[in-house]
Length: 289
Length: 235
Image (cartoon, rainbow over the protein chains, first blue to last red):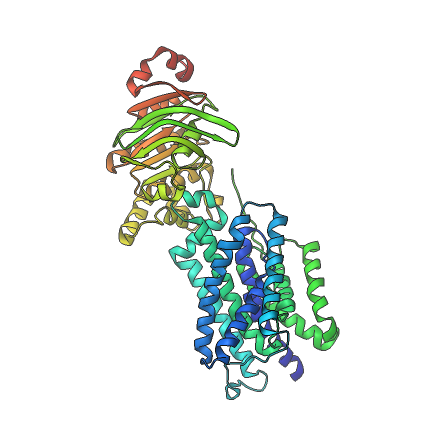
């Protein structure tokens, strides 16, 4: 029983990280109707950046904040420089650009930092443990994830800029007619997605350790989470993230073993696409003519 | 003149739709653009907002706006009620209205305007929190008109506001447009299939055929014109 509870809690902690990354995927999907395969590598790069800053002696939270800021700007730059030119290109061209971005970021990280695995610090001191079921980092990661999600929800729900970003994603033509700079809204979306990814990377790195391939598995789980919840539903992505995290841990510990865990994500992806392509929370849009 | 267009040409890809049009919209006036299906009425409005590839000269308040981006033209005070209504289907009716005022900085006045719009169109008050895509065609048309007004535009471009509305609603909508015109300082360019209705509301009118202006004058004069009466008014 104790082992079960522990696995569930650990699942929630990693699930929160999947939830963040799934949310980043959903944000870009809503704007471009494509899945950004480079999302994981962008997060990995951000995490290396944080590692560099901490290694240079910067306090953890200062490095954390600075990394988020720089990642936000990098996300905007990537959209402006790499994505913008293929804005109206066929789907496959854009997907190719995403994959190119993935390979480039991965290789550059390997080139700069080598492929040797590094440990990444957790900001949550061991004394902080809540009871015997949760490690301090698990508690902290869940807390940080929930904070990020709440902040995003408030931003999109209650600020004019958040509303404009939603509008630009769903109806660019009408958005221009009310004066919204649609191109910048898309860039802003990339910036936010990169910033969320950075948080996810820094939270997952103490668990999976830091190396250029660290996000490959995480991205797969996040993708499964986003699909499970419905690729166009932010709320669904978050719930999907937590479900996938718990499922992964329980199946890994008690049913299929750790070696087959990643296959579970793939099975889930295929299963959702076959049975319920819109996911569990994919919105049913009503349109009247 | 609030807006002046000189040898305005526009088209889609290889197909040219407007073949050099000259027209003007006087400050505070309502100008109707009449013509048959496919004459280029919608394209004219789109050309003014840089929604299609355009050449020629367009001046708004004396300054050239041709070549500027759609969102910049909106920011100058040109609101467009587009063909197809342009509803943000997945947002609530109120969010649709708020988006109309996105570029405005006077928060308090925006709240007042929101109330005023819900006063003009009481049905929108009932639908306020509803997803806009679930509104009926007529309700979405009212939403589109009020969203445009939320910009506090100097010029409003209306593309077939009567489209898809029941006759009673058309009457109501045009009554409100007349009301708005007398209360707010807004000029309008009105595209209508229903020529009788448009000439009733408008001060000036242009008749276009296959992308060219073939007749211009006061609404009164056009109403009395024999060929207009036969072809467009039907009596």
